[in-house]
Length: 424
Image (cartoon, rainbow, N blue to C red; front, top):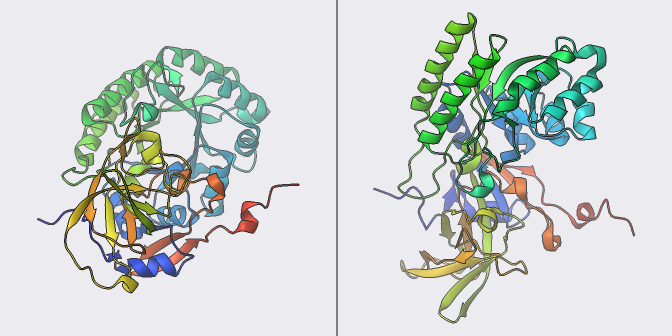
């Protein structure tokens, strides 16, 4: 059986790697396969509403694709609200989810984006929203993000539940928040719960049980339940996709009990980010130097944690493949060798082959030459989205492949753009 993540490739979604690395501004470059995004969205049709957590990959072309495919959208900032509006989302199809309002977000929610779903994570947000809306607060509907008292995730940094998490309203404070809302005439009509990214089935099922109990306590005004995101995504050979059909079935059983108790329909929502886009994405980079440090062989590439931060932040594993550069000719060997893959930045931690805690490890990769391409897979989520200009590196171009055709969806950043807002 062939590996899901081979270590040698020549193309991505039918387009030669060399073409992708040279025709759109040069490497490093992010590449997305639209067919994979469609496939992942289709696997979630068992849920009532799919709302894309755009923080994972907010490129306008990705947002527009998901809008056309019928997904709604989640926004966590004023900028993300504006992105959603820019591609044609109506406010009613946008959810603003946060633990605070900054001035820009509150102005949008009370103005240009009035009518969007507001999913609050603190009681202070309710007071601030009520004051901002004034007379328009009467009848306004919002949802509460609940911290159920427990959490889970692939890293402690992605655990979004429990007493050490800043996220959500502590479950015992929910009745108080409902009363705050009623003071302004605001109706709490939905609940949302997300305990972390990469949670396993047992923890996600626990979310379902906790949500049902809280919904029954809040009462029949509830019309929507969001089970959040956090669906696991495979990054290694041998890992399988989460059984979302089984998970949806458990939720629908819970929803049916709530509908029977309330006497009306309750809409089920899921809010995936990483699950929809992670394995659609690739970061294509180029080997710029190969050197030996003691017993360690390094492939040094032109992408670093300024482009893909997950390894240095979480010790995250990404599959790595080598594509031969045309000018280097055909490979002279099928041999693999143990290598460390590092980037160009000025920290020792700028290494893609590391584990949580910064432990550098080796990866078995093909023998390569300077000029060959290194492809970091499953990079569609929190890749470009978390990129920075650290070391004054330019943000990488982004390319979307649809039906075998590649098109530029974000230009490579220019020096003029890099310094545009600076004054001296």
